Image (cartoon, rainbow, N blue to C red; front, side, top):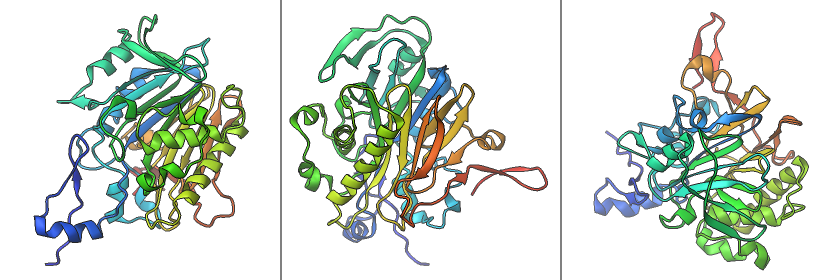
Length: 377
């Protein structure tokens, strides 16, 4: 029969491993897409407090199942895209994200997010990381958080008691593409009052990272080595009002658009494409993008679901697996921008309204005429 090379697999600590003979690796390297971007994230913003365990730990498909070994990513509806390509899909929606994790949340009365990060796997032996369990259950860890506009104060105890609840929560599991296994490279990244996450990769990052002309006061906020954190710095440099923290949804949307444009233009002389699934919140609103710079290719998946309150959950993969529950989830279309606040509601639009690459949203599940429910392909 015909020989189809297998994709290189990532180890549990992010290293690329080959199951092919050594002599076959050069050919495989030519065949396999050069930019492999992993990670998975979940973000909630709403007028009502969300139980962190109910968002990150207890769902049928939670942050741990997104991070640990599984047969494949949970991506209902993705195959309905006319750009579906099975050989490329796995490298943008990896099944292991074990190179670190992090959680950010907001406390009423404070504009600055709290944050816990780790360079360790989010779960081991089927159990969540102990620090994550202590966090959501209310056993107080030491919590680094942004205390002023331009400095990070660490090792400050949180006075909260009881299970973690918040009107804005962000969770992330990492599959390293750039930057070592260091908690400084784990998401979420904090810029003043903003929490920032990324799923994907900036193409040719090592070659182009010095091309971004960031002012020293913004560049100094980048503590790690990742393309994701630098992208957050590019965002805040384009955010009207930063670092004062008084942002409208229009400000956040405009900064997201110009960030996507700036990154794409900075490395357009390279052949590889960018996968830029960004999410940002100030604790009151959120903006998310699902974007890939090649018009013929899909980005990693990104879904959303409205909740009572009103509120919204945006996640790389739906938190539900039952078809009836998946009726409430929608796959954000390629090159689309989502924004939400409890006051303004939901707005989904094209990153570039003139681009033919912008694609409609897709359902995660479908109800057939006979009343039966099926996962969307």
